Image (cartoon, rainbow, N blue to C red; front, side, top):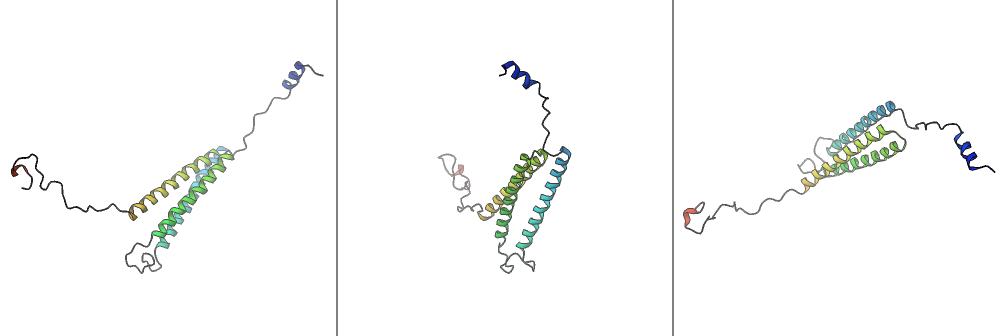
Length: 162
């Protein structure tokens, strides 16, 4: 049987603990990969935007499938664009989580920013599409606000237009 003093002596006389080595990437590699990944994602989004814009136009250059009659036929393309941006944002959020879990802070931070940009772009596109689909109603009354109003209960010389 060992005494408590012997137990502490044995525990403290062990070799000193070495600092934990980082499993993550070197910071320069992490930073370079973050910049390259954001550039690659930007290129993919631009290619998707170009493909969506080209699919909204017919092969003959007319707008959509109604024979070029001037109708707005690019609503499905705009919906696909917003859905595509949201899918890209979800994929970027997944990459963000994976990079932070693998101790790559620059990659994770760059993906957070890329995800926010994609979400803002999708939100702006959805708001723009909603505004075009639901324009402000035109006023129905022809009353201009000054016709026939008198400022006091007196005679007609105090009334505008009368």
